[in-house]
Image 1: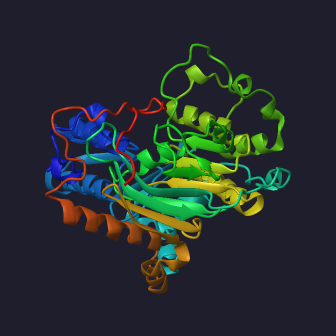
Image 2: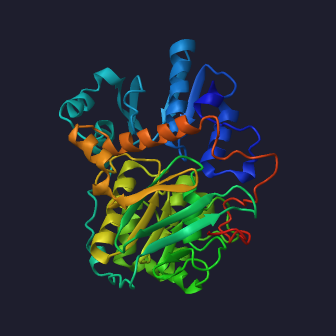
Image 3: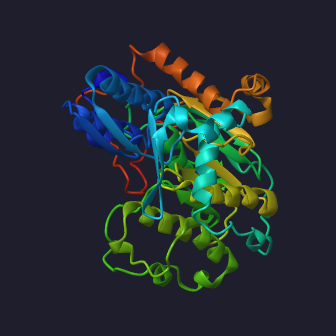
Length: 426
């Protein structure tokens, strides 16, 4: 049942040869395989696509309804969670601020009746924002140098095909798209669709022949100078450093800029923290601070908000939107979290089975406009959910990442250039 819920699909998967989302499914399968009376779960759906997230939550709901189990689930991801939970427990300043059944949560039902977008998320934002001082203004961005875009698109691929070993199954198959400068590109697709691989290629982390991927008018891998203009956020700090520096020591003089101080407030970072002595969530915030403190023309971001609370998430997305609108920067953002993301993206890239399904402006997606016109409270989530369920339904017997018993050559989370690819392009 759990195997079907996630779904794992293929027991021949090698842990080092699958994506982060697929690896997370394997970890959850191992942890939840043995039946329990009580499940205490902390942000378990990070890195899961909508199909796997909903399948896991359905499994846990069945455990409570059919077997009498109790599930205690801490999360910052509220996409369609109101229909799942029976109770809500809200903590504030180390105390219980609210504890009740979902049907007794009158504030939520009032927002729902008023047609508020993402009503549970909106209510949680209202409560969480009371914990902080009012968000600062974004005047710090007005002093930064505007982006001087070169001629041509900001991001472009031309019939890009890539696999981790010559002759292996491609992680990208004939991928072609073009996006203009100043775009906020939302990248969507199921786990294993090729999003993170594409991100790492655009970030210059994978070796490809010249001519298949250009960034800011330069070749993504073969023009090293482009790295100065690209902020790549696809690998996270997961190990201790040989020097245990404070955040201030790591950043240096950039700490004194108004931009950095704004990000410190948004991300709730203490510059006196020592990197080796903080939690994974705090370390992720410090890494985001380090990456964003210096303005760049292009940002490549992979699931950057998964460990952030609602205050930091909203502040970071507002910051990135202003980067585009004020400075003319370009953002390429892969995510499975669609809480309150309506209206944020200017463009869409939809990937499936290593291929591009479509790329266009958001206002050209007719299905999205129809959901908005119908009064859907979570139109973006509903749209992507429909696409991903269609993909799984069409490929249930032919899983996207069908591996044999050998490794595919992937070395995860190292942030290094991959092996030379001999089959790339047409």
